[in-house]
Image 1 (tube, rainbow over the protein chains, first blue to last red):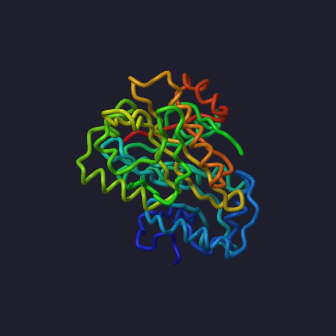
Image 2 (image 1 turned 90 degrees about the vertical axis):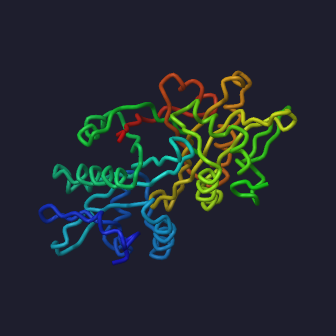
Image 3 (image 1 turned 45 degrees about the vertical axis):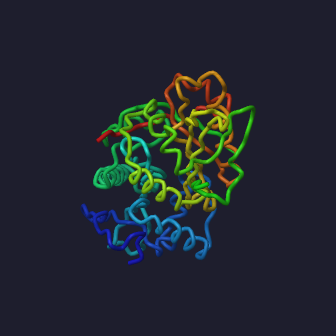
Length: 163
Length: 163
């Protein structure tokens, strides 16, 4: 099991037939990149490009966690949903840590089953266990109510410069 | 000069008497933590706590840059402003990178001199040079116009869970 942090099994959770677990290298073959393309422009990566990025992120250990949802009993083990947490270490708040949630997406064929909420709630729990004093994310205004179901409240505006 | 990445001199910029440069270990003695306390709860760190966090962040090299503003000719070399950039590596966008701007603050005695804008513009330039496809930040609605001066446009809402 080539997860980003094999020693941390705490991310794995099974509810019904769908399992939430950490990203594995083999998920490149299970449509992980194609799933992300439902969120943003996402040209496929070659196996070696995927492996290189996977290794870069794995080097962060538990400071960078990508969760995926899959049905291990399905004939074709496609990734059905994903969400990412990375931990930022700061000088303020007594050397505090902030969890950033990124790249949450549920496959169009798997929506309405609560998979996204399961992933986000697990991500929040991981951030709490890691000692973060808060966990934050940016989303469109339409998703306020969705994230409110996981305990998020609106705090500010997101600004961006695109190059 | 113990900067977070001594080999990268590109962050240093001088305009008038105020210099923008990367954070140094010695900035603990120059009021860096006390400056952050104008932004958020920020109990002081001991010298060894500060050095430990400094080393953790320096390990990220150019993926984590803290800029500070100071007047090197001043008798007391206090840090007058700061801003942080960290680079997040993704699988989407062909293995793209996003710059996150955090913890921008100008000392109450040094406001109105454009120091914050100089730091944010430099941070945006570093993100561009690093190959990021965008740079993002979260702020209060009142600061929209401030960040618009650096080319930022509103993209979404920030949501948070506090523990």
